[in-house]
Image (cartoon, rainbow, N blue to C red; front, side, top):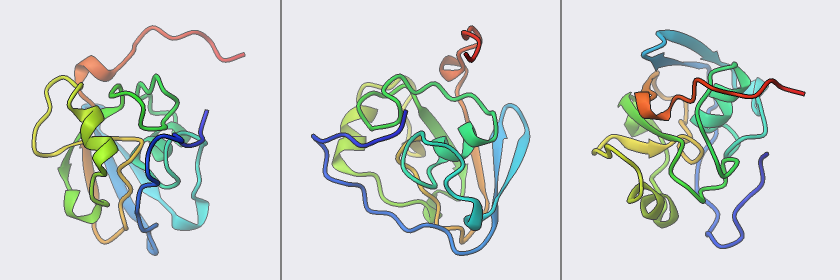
Length: 136
């Protein structure tokens, strides 16, 4: 879907300048992120965890299309959180509605790593929609 939410201030973030990896748990799928290939999809901020996941066929629910208008893309950044942009007020407001929020919680559509280290990201069980329509 892509796009932006006209009611939110644009998020501040820095795109990576060097390759890094994201390990998605519990899938144990490792994705190599090449800055030259960003964007991988049209979901979430350019270079966001959601955008990279969707571009590598890793399903993360995102009911709003990745525009920071819901909390369905809630993930937990187990390692490498310091390399991600700071959460905006809009993101923190949406996280208030998410289940199981902790200090390493982020919205996948808003978290953009700068590539200074590798990430380990957990997709919570309640955030994996196993029933999907086929792509048309």
